[in-house]
Amino acid sequence: MIIKANNYLLYFLITAITLSLCYFLINIATPFLAAAVLAYILNPLVEKLQIKLKLSRNSIVLMVFGIFLTTITAAILVLMPIIYKQIALLVSNIPIYKENIQNFIDSSNTINNLDNIINKNIKHMLNEIINSWILILTHILNHIWQYTITTIHSIITVGLSSIILFYFLRDWKLIINTINSILPQQGIAHINKIATNINTSLLAYAQGQLNICIILSIFYSISLLLINLDFSLIIGLFSGITIIIPIVGIIISTSIALITCFAKFGLSLSLLYIL
Figure 1: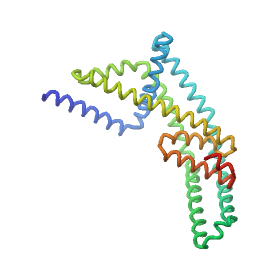
Figure 2: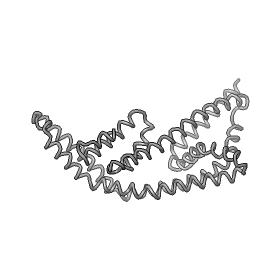
Figure 3: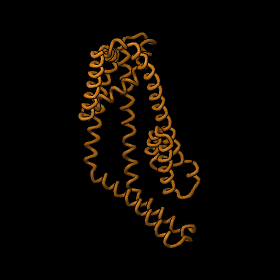
Figure 4: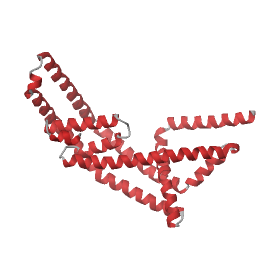
């Protein structure tokens, strides 16, 4: 009984030390964690193709890795210039949007008919919000070199993650077998059963959320582009990603799209199209 308790204490200490190291060495561990998550998602595809095509695991891993890397590289090369262009357009258009909104308020009979104090408070609040966004964007532009270094660091991290991903995919079964070998052998069958159930549910959820994000990002971007809304790609991608957060994500992304549409078109049918 004492030996069993000591074993559980040892496993707990190993887990605690591992998590502590990951926390303190997060910058170093990031490529490994990212590669592990991607390998976890892509491994079922590798196993299915291996059974269907009857090829060696190394060949299948090379094929899946090549397709994945090509897709990611193409997406970055195509999307990044567009995103940077739309960000630059956003910065240059902020004064125009601010003027359009203020002109709408000044010409609105509804607001002008309100008490002067309320009217001034509304204008003051609007100016504060717009000025805050201008300060944020100015801060970003003033620290563009720092963000460039961060971008380079991110590219290096992606490169390292890709290399590590290849070896994780190739040796995934070896990794699982090694983990099984250090688990308590008395309850290994029960542990594997629980782990299999968790794996099935978690993998289905992760793959489902990923598919939803990709599909909705494409749908939103194209839809906003069709109504000629500025920054359609940025808003579409942001909306697709934030859809993971129930209700809150939809509210935030819809609000951003409505504000942008209102700043450009004013009160028009385009607002209804977004809704």
